[in-house]
Amino acid sequence: MSGVEWAFFGAALAAIGGGIGSAIGIAIVSGAATGVVSEAPEKFGRLLPLTAMPGTQGIYGFITALLVFIFLGFFEGDLALSATEGLRVFFSCLPVAFVCMVSGIYQGLAAVGAVGMVARRDEEAGKALIFPALVETYAVFSLIISVLMLITVTG
Image: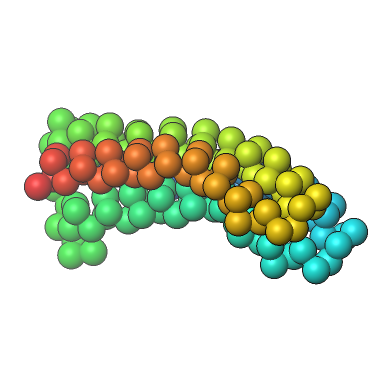
């Protein structure tokens, strides 16, 4: 494969991994949240942030893919990479691709527990956000590492 193809492969994996993790995580927590909302519709506003939270991994994957296009000059039509440079970009995308895929799923699982907490004790909704947010930390770390690697290999 050419360098540009390796770079695009990495960008695609970042977007796909983050998207898969987010979709699965949101689906997991949505099942629990809809059950609670069907019994207590007034809790929708408190459960929406918990349900949306796993979606951030998809955003991180999208940001990484977009940065690959920006750093490579895709929008200026200036695409020239050696195979080695393309492989470097590819490997730069892997942290966010894999961590966001896994963390999105586990964040959805953590959010299910938080939904149960809000179902029983509505006043604890703020505390309930903390537990799934802890999972988010590792997705943010992977985004930072991928961005730093992209800056290093393309700068």
